[in-house]
Image 1: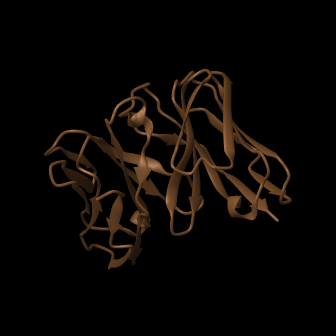
Image 2: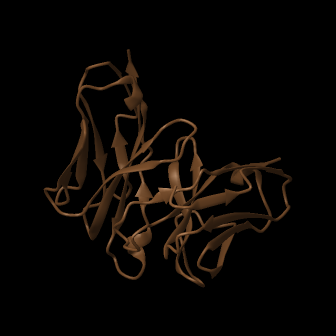
Length: 114
Length: 116
């Protein structure tokens, strides 16, 4: 699993509350990603990081922010959760530190916004 | 093609059948094409990454080809087994500059069910 741990694994929260998901990796990978998976949409990129404090937006970044203050942690924050953000969130890393390397995914976080 | 598209959406085959799926992707500024296998209740696992036109990759009974000029890739499974049942995802990235290489766009996947 390329040393990736996502926490929490499951979370239920109410609309309007802030939520932070954590992705922790132990192998010093440079590139980290947050995806969401929804039926009919496959995996969609939210944000990604190419180094400490270096991040960029993906295709569905509205309503999300990220932070990477140290190599091992990539945090995804929903500033004010909405029901449309109910999803399964996957963190991924790129071992080998090359853009063309395959992604290794974490086990996912199932988030339900009520 | 602006998005990554996969066909068919789902496929049911009998054990022992050979099958193939298609992935269409933007051919302009192409950088890399990825294939992943995603079993239920697990995380996606990488099968192949291909970058060069004409690339062919093989892993056991699974193989893939790449045509970057026309923007398509085929995934083949020879002699399907029930354990091959999974969703097969493809994803592409571009070299449009900056950090675009990191923006993998996934297709919706092909759901394969292999019946014993």
